[in-house]
Length: 69
Image (cartoon, rainbow, N blue to C red; front, side, top):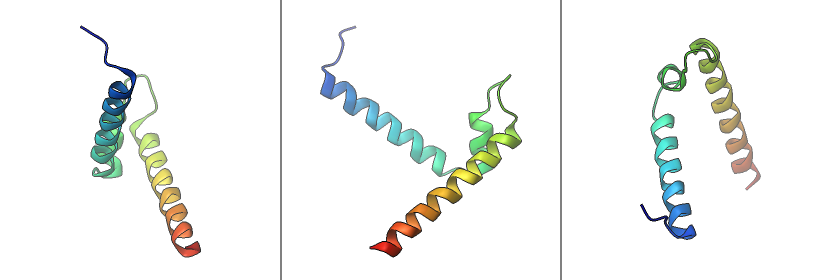
């Protein structure tokens, strides 16, 4: 298998990253936590709490940015 040139590989990685974020963001916090769960890792409840916290922080940052504009 031939390696892709750097710009093509970077663009493919960016598309995959974006698709993953879109999929994750379309899920409820519980669904996203279940999808992120890995045996031996954080409990689903803790992952869910982190997702809720991160989403709240992102909303607050977005709202602050909009208010400043």
